[in-house]
Length: 108
Image (tube, rainbow, N blue to C red; front, side, top):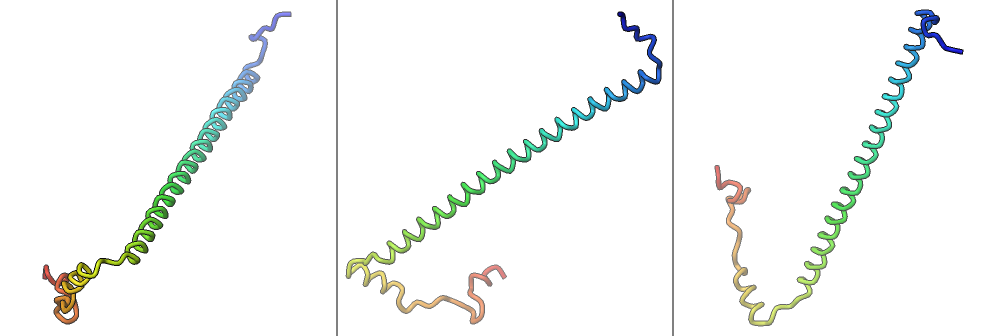
């Protein structure tokens, strides 16, 4: 049996065409939404990885700095060197205008 498309009424053709068009639009929107969700997820994952790495780097630097400062505080300089070093700073006062240091008022 041959299917003759000319035997179908115009209203039926318009209805079927509308359904096909709606299916195409639905598939397009579903694909676009899925791609948007995937891109959002990938962006979030990249952000979390970068934030974790940066936070780890900062914590590592802080830990290293703390160890360096702690080690420097335990080191004792030899007697002569320590005496000369301390003598350079004894009796020196910071220059000031009374309320504000000169460094702040230098440009004014």
